Amino acid sequence: MSTVARRGAGLVPSLQVLAGQAGRAVQGWPWWLQATAIYFAARLVTACIFMAAALHQGPNPWFPAKPDYWNFINIWDARWYGQVIAEGYPSVLPTDAAGNVQENAWAFYPLFPALAGGLSALTGMNPAAALTIIAMLAGWGAALVVYILFRHKATHAPALWGVAFFSTFPVSAILQVPYAESLTLLLLAGALLLVVRRQYLWAIPVVFLLCLSRPVGVPFAAMLGLVLLRHVWQRFSARRDGSGQREGTHSNGDLAALAALTAAGGAMALAWPAAAWAATGDIQAYTKTETVWRGHDLVPFKPWFDTGVDLFGPVLGLLAPFVFVALFGAMLFLPPVRQLGVELRLWCACYMGYLVVFLHPQTSTFRMLLPLFPLALGAVLLSGSRAYRWTVVTMFLLLQIVWIVWLWAWAQLPGGGDYPP
Image (tube, rainbow, N blue to C red; front, side, top):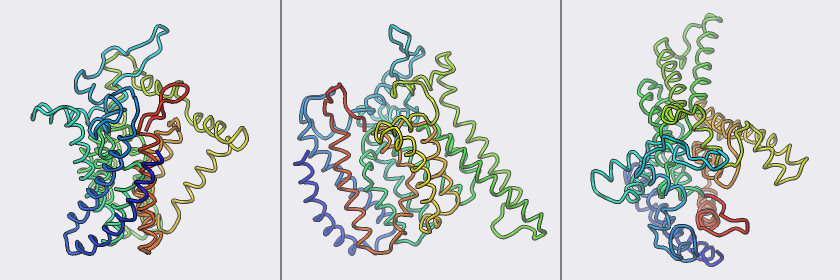
């Protein structure tokens, strides 16, 4: 681990110099080419980190020690998506001798493996390769849509820096491995862009696909509901004080379209659990499957307090979740974050609220923070200093080394298994 970290730490300053020189050379390029260059440069750096870490990978459950790059990135949940392509979803939930549901494919949403399976069938390529290609292309598309979204809130340079923060974030390595995160981020950025533009009816098919990619439908529907309530209240307030329709308020058509999107989003948020129920006959098939990985039943809020007690003791541990929520809420009102606008801030609030209610905090939590990507622009807007922004990118790349070496690489723990990425 220390060897990889030293190599990565020596690589980052050199990359910063080269990136500065390249940045001056590409200033005349169109925005999409600049964003593309940033995204693929970040993925190249991540690939180098993966390859360096693979050289130090010891015995593991999947392949011999010191695997090549392609084997190294096709581990952990990537194997589940490959299983979905090969076998589909079980009609009977697997159980142990005591009747407890075991790990199974219903925890993994269908859109990502369906696209990769289709690509594999059309081209004859290995499903693992198809999954990787879909993930990479989706991550590229996400970077472009993120730029367009950020341009609604900032000028070109900050939006481009926002793409740089998005592309180098410590867990952005997940954008080039066979996980569904990159596809979800593409669809999420597209849905948020359409909401910001008030193109609500166009957003319905995007939200439909989003809800089949990963479990983000519930917080997205909650965000839509709050946006709808806000605009209804604005219309009501305008009529009550006799000012008529103020600039920026929604027309009746806008409200109807937003209501339709909200209803569709709420219905689609329940589509995958309903599909699991229909296929298995068990109304709790999806939740039973999801809770297998946490080792106990789903009890809202409780895991955060349990983890707080484990980390900080019985007193501070009980206070820790409240402190975290308060700090996150205060951050949403900082001037740079307020510049994101109501919709993006509400999304961040609803998604974090969803995690606090339902998530069991563990090492995978870092990966699950990626849908909060709008905050990357807030971090950019915190300072216009290039030194500050380059420092953040450098810090992100160094932390990316930590994430890959600590969580992605397999290391046998004394009690068995390893921390999941």
